[in-house]
Figure 1 (cartoon, one colour):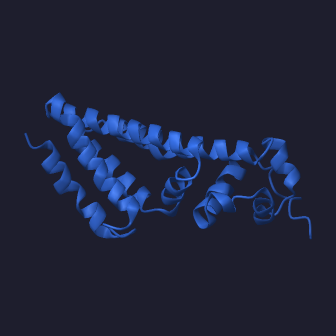
Figure 2 (cartoon, helix red, strand yellow):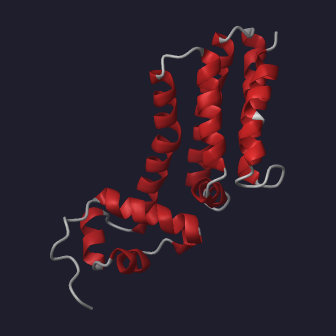
Length: 188
């Protein structure tokens, strides 16, 4: 095999994580193998072990990377809008609905079905997202005792997009339902 690394910047851990996320979306967690990643990137496995002691460490980093990007980054960017609660609801629900229809979100949820650590992380992510939605619903004027249930109903729309059974993946109607769902949730 020719040396393709001579003019390439050194790979860092994030390069491995990014490549592994693509592989996860394509093949599921069982398909995320160090050998396959190394071939795909075009570098030896030694580079991998420079950054990660083993595959389990890579999987942990993938979980945390996804949790941050798919939840905290979305929340931070919505808050940075400085918009009223309804506009932030529309922003996060649209982004999470689109993400749920993506192969990576579905792969993460599939992974959680077979891995207790991933299941725990996914449950924490869902709780974080629900708490954020509940805060926005409450800030929009819904009574605190009703805000939790209404946030759950909104998040249920997002999860329906992830399931791909009620609303097929990539179906534009998933995002088309967001504004009417918000209207219902915020009705006194």
